[in-house]
Image 1 (cartoon, helix red, strand yellow):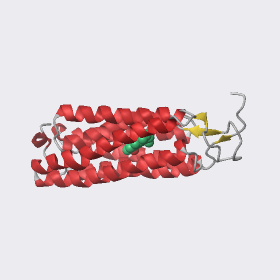
Image 2: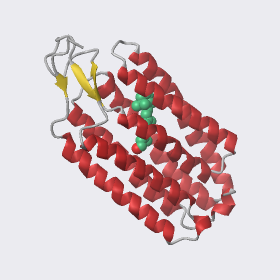
Image 3: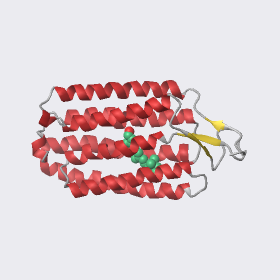
Image 4: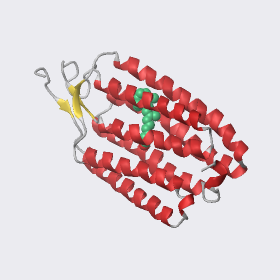
Length: 248
Ligand code: RET
């Protein structure tokens, strides 16, 4: 845009992004392999969970390849030459394409486990899409309006967290002891991890406080816990649960 003088991009991030890609690919094969050991009527959670790590594999493949990002002028130039107008930051918009597909699938995994009625599931997923899109737009905006988008996203996350820790948890407990337990583990992990994403956003895309290298580590660890580790825990939790009991 003529006034850009420098771009803060990852310098060591690529190797780490490739390592996460490898884990996501392995997890996808593992979840699909486990699906094949079950009768077809018992595979729904394997399929959803494998789709999540498959999409993440492609997002991480993109970031490892140095793709899926765009330079955005930062509100507070900090990473390089503090006070220099027009300093850019590497914003990985591909994360949000990943999250737009995978966060509804993660919620589907959880809310189907709790056997919530489908209109409730649909509404929670639509609010989740609001959260991801406001995060993307906020990340692409330079001015302080970005914090307005961020606030909308945080309100959406508060609603999702309320459904997970209250409505869905209670519903899962009514469905049976084993279902309640599976939900408690996976729902608690999700409620905790998802609250760390806006913190990461605030110090990366938002406030430009930490470098894109540190961002790679922060989001990478969160994504490994929120997708492959969550997925393994969910599939393990379903080992003795017949999907027919959940109306599936
Ligand atoms: C944003 C910024 C706007 C405010 C909030 C956010 C929350 C994002 C979350 C993302 C979860 C991603 C997952 C990915 C899978 O691995 C969009 C960062 C609240 C909760 C679980």
